[in-house]
Image 1 (cartoon, rainbow, N blue to C red):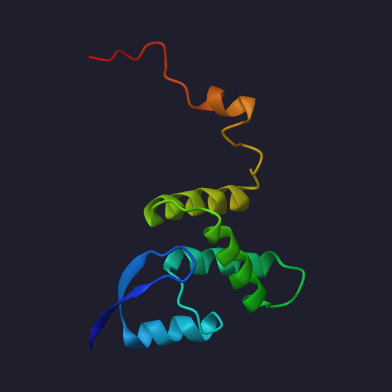
Image 2 (tube, rainbow, N blue to C red):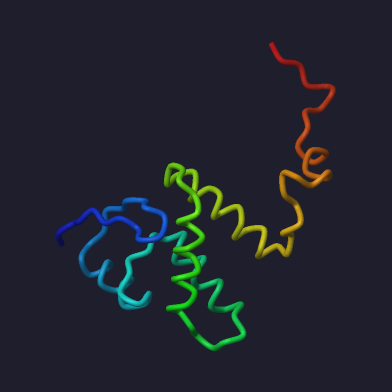
Length: 114
């Protein structure tokens, strides 16, 4: 099996995959190759959608979302993972701008830095 390097059409992350896997992913996502995280986000959007199985629309929406950010693909992957986990936990209100965010992630007063 020959391994090829392929770039996600949403976030730009590169992965090494077999041609069979690449073809399988493209068949599921309207001819576009998506990395693992982007494919999970698109599947999550399709499952949340009121329309039954509109993959093309979910792919376009996610590509638009990824296109808004010009940062490193690894940073976008981390941000996408955080967003996906928040959606699954039902906790979209906890953002950095939220007053409760700073309270949840503060250093303990008993922690000493050496």
